[in-house]
Image (spheres, rainbow, N blue to C red):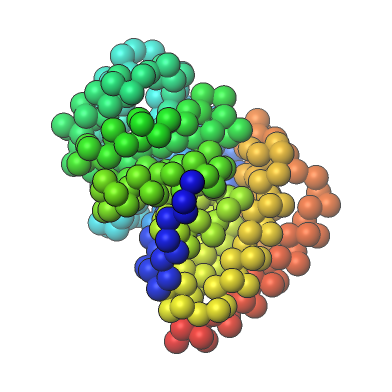
Length: 318
């Protein structure tokens, strides 16, 4: 395929999934969670809650509702994205998504529709009909392509389906988490022809430089250091060479954290944030895969380098 053009000096839109921290007794550390959400806004990124990084597939529905209510109160009108998650629920998928979308919209958030086993077999027409039905009751929402390396019920659309979904005006963007550059480049090319205002949010934590070709992002990796991502994005908008070194170190972190088994990146994130003094414990959700303790030494060197680069980047863009 022919690549889309590079987009220098572009203002990148960053949405960052927020890690849900856990204490050593296995309980949610909601005090630290609130602080991480607030820190995301302060960095200039949009927080995304009840996402994979927030263990949404391991939480009870009541837990997701509590988190949505907490963030709604914290937001004070500020923008946030929230996962509309129906996996495991019984009922008609359209009705289930409608319930979730309504709750998120009423809380002031922008819904993003997680894939689900119930819709995994939908063909292009069925999925488009579902999205149109959601659009009739929600002024703005996001789609979500999620590879099965993240969750077993993940689903990646074929390109014809993606192009059909571009015709739904209320669908303002979609997160693409296949970890495939080529599939994402195809979507950017289709978007540029058919609907330039549509946002392709890269979810490729192994290729975060996709922003150079016109992707925006909704990443779990950005939860590790929202200030570093915000600094990187500013440097790109300025056309500053410092973008590349900062991006390289963030990608080094991504390669370490998102190695197999991929879901263990959330433990890596907890280790990283704990080292930064931002959460009380480095424990993941009790049912999430773990990383070895010796990873902490590797993360330590990355923390120090990123902090230094962010300091330099702030000086450059001041």
